Image 1 (cartoon, rainbow, N blue to C red):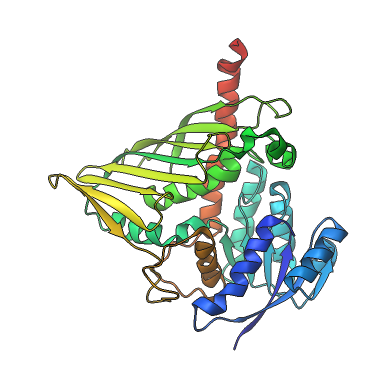
Image 2: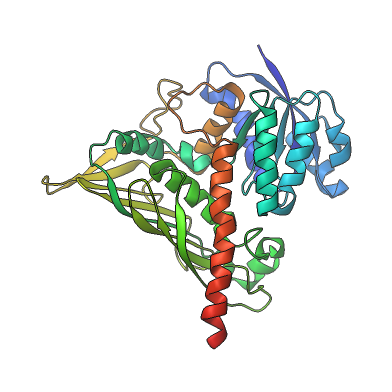
Length: 366
C-alpha cells in the first residue's frame, strides 16, 4: 500500500476538518494510500503543539522547520489568507513534496497571481495541486453538472448565484474574526465565501466570466470600509452571451449556510440549493413541470458507502475532495486545480476594484 507523509501549515478550525476528511477516507473507499500525519506547523507554538497532540500528528514545529522536513510528501496550506502564496512557494521548494492542497483564496494580489502562473508552468506535472473548493464534490452538484453539460436545456441566457451567512451581524462574532475583515481581495465576503460561489458558477458557466459592476453594503463599527460584508457582482459570460448576478454575504439574517444557483437557458432551467442538498431540479420548455432529480450521496462507481440514497453533507464532499487529491481516481469529477483557483482569484481581485469604484461614486454621498 502506498504511504504518504502529510504536513499541515495551519492549526485552526479548517485544519480540523481536513484531519477528519483524511481519517475518514478508509471508511468510504476500498483503495486509498496510508496517510501518515507527520507534522503540523503554525505561528503559535502552543496551538500547534495542542493540535498535534489532539489530532495525532507525530510532531509540531515551526513553518521554517517543516519546510526542511524531507519526510513530507503532501502539504496542506491552511493558514491565514494573506500567507497562502508565501506558504505555497515554500511547499514547492520542499524536496519530496508531490501533493499540495491549497485552501482558498489562493493568493491576495495581482502580483501574486502572476507569480503563481509562472510557478505553475515550472512545476509541470511533478506536483499535484488542488484548491479547497469542495462544494464541487457535493453529489447533487456533481450530478447536476452532468445534466447541465448534456445540453438538454440548451445555451444559458441568465443566472443567479447566492452564498449567504448571517454570523457577522453579531458583534462578538466579528470581534473574534478581525483577521477576516481585511479589505478585498485579501478578506471580505467575496474572498471568503464568494470564492466558493465563483468556483461553482465557473464549473457551470466556464472560467472566462467578466465583472461589469459591483456593489457592497453593511457598515459596522470596527469593520474597514473596504471589507465587503455583503457584495454583489454583475457578470457576463462572453462565449454564450449569458449574464447574471452573484452575491456573497456575511450579514443575511436567518440564511444559515445558503448556497443557491439558478440558470435559465433557451430550452429550460436548472436550480440547486444547499437547503435541499439531496437533489437538483430542472425544467424543460413545454413540459409545464419542474423535475426533482434525487441524488443522495451518489459517488458510484468510486464508492457507495454508506449508501447512495443517504443525504449528503458538507464534510462528505470534503472527504471526496481528499480522495481525489491523494488518488486522482475520479475521471468524471471537476477538479479544482490551480488554474481553476487562479480563475476564481481573478474575480475576487477584480471585485475589490469594482467595490472601490462603487464606494467612491455612491457611498461618499451619504
